[in-house]
Length: 426
Image (cartoon, rainbow, N blue to C red; front, top):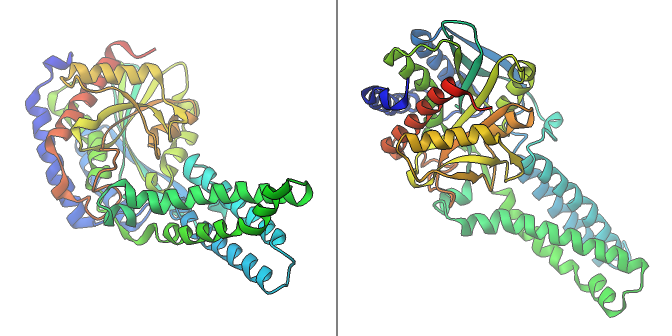
């Protein structure tokens, strides 16, 4: 079947169904912290839906530490503040002579803090998980099998968990100044403090003239400024307040649900293409669910016998920013080029000419977790990178849904499935 022949009434009915279902999920189950009971209850709700129009649906369990990903904002901030104050007190009370030893303390602590930030926040490594209590979380998988032998497989994915509130985005209404001051100031200050301490350590052993003396005598004032910025980092995440997650990412979740539902309603049966809906948990905890699933199914999903692709849908809201994200994880991961182009061309076929290949310049999507395991994946998303006023805060509720953006996203998902069935993407 060509996309132009797919019944538009089915897509529109599923958009209405999505708006009603998202409203119902939020009212019934509330915010869904990664791995918590609300999250699992919402997944069980979805499984009941899947059981009506899929061949099989099941849960896959894994272990994760939900707070390990973002808790660096507390840990790093506290240890740097303590290090700066400790060094200052030791120097001023004469316990140590001058500020050289204090510079060494700050250098070591800030260096470790930056290492944690890079591995956790930029590279999404499970770097500090060993220090946190792990819980059982679940991914939900539903499958629509073809009539014949499986030769191709397309997975439509969305994450069901919602984010801890980022205070600067809530109080700053999504605009960057407050976020830049809190997060940017802290990380930027830490980087400069580390560079300054290295210069000071070198200046202690190598004659750098008046510049070296100045750095040794007065640069510590900058570390005090860095410590002040760390207060903003400490307050950055409110772990007690969780976003309702209507747009981020129940819209992506229902894109996966409705992909199978729409095929069923339209009576589309593929000869050799298996269509899978994957609802992950733990995306907001550092892609934990997608990482666990990708690792467990790497051999299956990279097999040459069955061409497999994964389309991750994440926030279908701000239509003017609807793009295919060929670069991910702050631009450091390149998603599959051929599949990204297939989705992009499908968007144009579905009537959305403005779509382009884009890069996730800050943060990551589940697609990166699959790409890192060698699985062909890309991301479809529509969110204002400003960022949006609802992003990671309590404003992301059902009253902020945009049906037109959801409809456009669904058209692109269906077009991508049909095009992949016809030609694959290799």
